[in-house]
Length: 265
Image (cartoon, rainbow, N blue to C red; front, side, top):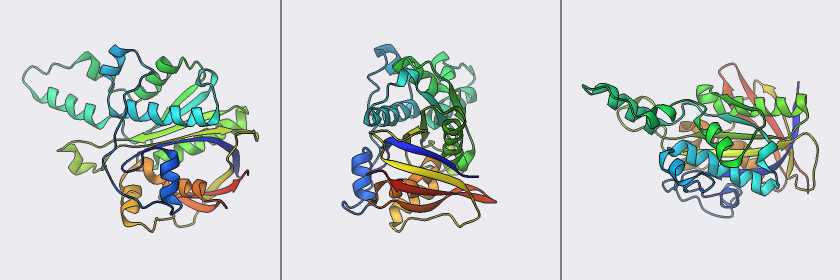
């Protein structure tokens, strides 16, 4: 079975990838890729007190979500959403573990509130006023592709636009030794059931036994293989290509997801 939709907006933020236009220029070969630490902007859609409380994954998710919805010309208020992350906020997890290792075992209420897996989705709702359905997923290294399938399913079944936001951030040591995600990386897509004036491409996805696509650039391939949200890079490369094309995305041990991209222009 194939799932089909139109992509109307894209948001990206990661190491050396400051936004979608600059990411597209790298992936289609117009610009060289220069790895650099991810710079997370302050989420200005939140009140000052809330801005001070949020962690890296919330800043990341809000940033890419806002870029994608702005490009699509979509009002987030009525936009259904899917948020997908392999592990949530690594820094916050580290701080909670550290607090529990101390004699007092006192946990900050703010740390606890930000430890839930749906924290980014909650702050998205607070900041944008979004009231539509929101689903939050975790599928370890398959989290991006699981989120993509969930978003496409909602688009096809419910015939409504859906925002997909996939994001991950690094863990400090000693957790980093067991989960070596190198840096923060996030991607967002606005998907619609029918073609619009703002539509960029049509995407068709189905399960496949094909070998997952790799990237030729060593640094980009390392990012793809070590950061679950960056498993989106072969798809993003197709979105950056004038002619579109086909790619197999990492998913489960027994299956991948084949995506076909056809430009609307």
